[in-house]
Every structure is written in C-alpha cells, then in structure tokens.
Amino acid sequence: MEDRELLNVVDVEATCWDGQPPPGAVSEIIEIGLTVVDLHAGERVDRHSILVRPARSTVSAFCTELTGLTQEEVDTGVGFAEACRLLAAEHGAGTRPWASWGDYDRHQFTRQCQATGVPYPFGRRHTNVKAVFTEAYELRKRPGMARALEVAGLPLEGRHHRGEDDAWNIAALTLHLVSLDPRHAHRLTAPSA
Image 1 (tube, rainbow, N blue to C red):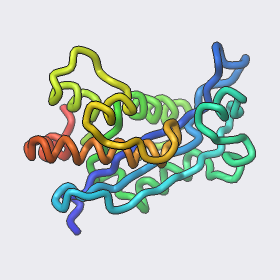
Image 2: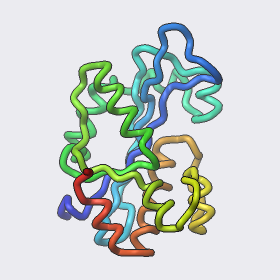
Image 3: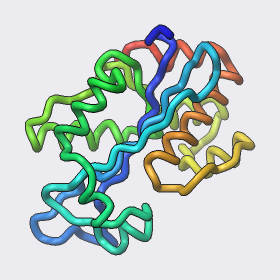
Image 4: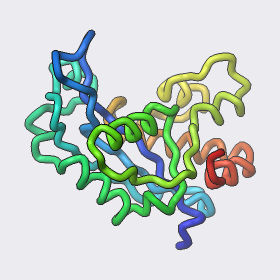
C-alpha cells in the first residue's frame, strides 16, 4: 500500500470541566483516536486508541460522563511526548495526510506541543472534514459529527466523544464525501495552504 492513498483520521479527547478549569489546570489530550483510511480502496483499514496520561490536569467527573474515560484509565496511558512519537513512528503522522472534524484537534496538538516542547507529529497536509462536508451539502452552519452522520444517512458507531469511535465515524463521513465526489479524495491528500 502506498502512503499517498492512506489518510489518518484523528479525533482527540481532552480533559474538560463543566465551567472553568481548576486553578493551574489546562486542557490536555487524554485519548488519540486514529482510523486509517485507504482512499483508493474506499475503506477504513485500521483503528487505534492511544490513551495519554495528563501531566497538568486530572479527569473530572464531567469529563468521565462525556467521554467514558476515567483518571484510572488514562493513568495507564503513555506520556504526551511518547504518544506523539508513536503517531510519527507507527502511523506515519509526519508523512501521511490527516483529517479531523473541525480544527479543534489540530489546534489542541499545536497548543500542547508548544506548551510542552514536544515536536509537532503531523505534516502540513491537514483537512477539516467538517468544512468539506458543510460545503458538499451546502449547509448554512457547520454541523457536529453526530448531526452530519444523520444528514449523510450513516449510523453512529460506538460511543460519541470517545476518540477511537469518533475517528471511526469521521472516517465513514470522509469516505461518504469521496463517494459523492471523487475529487474530494484529492482535497484530502493535498498539502494545506
């Protein structure tokens, strides 16, 4: 398989609170969900979940309710630097194009890499699938992932707000867009401006 046909679809979950974070706490990635899509074959070929141990925050009850992840679970994860190393070494993050639903995931990685001095694991080829979907369906507002699945007539598989499951569902939406217009495959692999 050639990397130019493969796309990493990424969804992260991060520590969050119902309201303001506790003093000194910052939002940190606690799960990286990744689904590998073979755009040429039109299928999802692999899925991963990397649990990440937060260093400057803890998992709140609100966060557990939203994601299903507990502090005990993320404590078994790897550090953020190791997670970024795994993305690059095992998933071709630096060379393979990647996509996410919206820009939150890209910005969260940028912020956390800058704050921790960890090298950014991804290359420049990023696609905001939410923007492509909104344009393809000529929607006035950009929908959330669950709403987009309804619009596309696709099922929500797994648990919403779990990185691994959300990446899997975003990958289904990505393939749906390519099936609507094969030119979307080029948009998903072209370098970002």
